[in-house]
Length: 74
Image 1 (cartoon, rainbow, N blue to C red):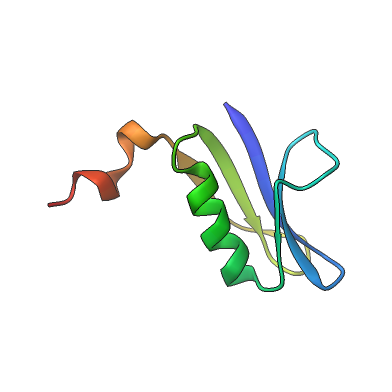
Image 2: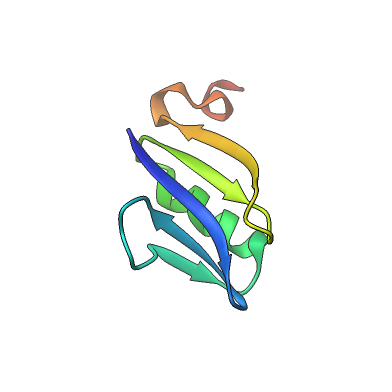
């Protein structure tokens, strides 16, 4: 499973795959980067750690499209 991180770098928020130097996505706000991350992860399997501005982990989300509980709600 791939690991990803959402972090603040200067005045930008970045969504980066662990081990990569360049971010997969970037945005001006945390809310915007979380939305971009959701779209990016919609067909992928991985763990996303969302960090606070100070670098501490705020939450972790696991993505597996086939097991996504939002897809099973009618």
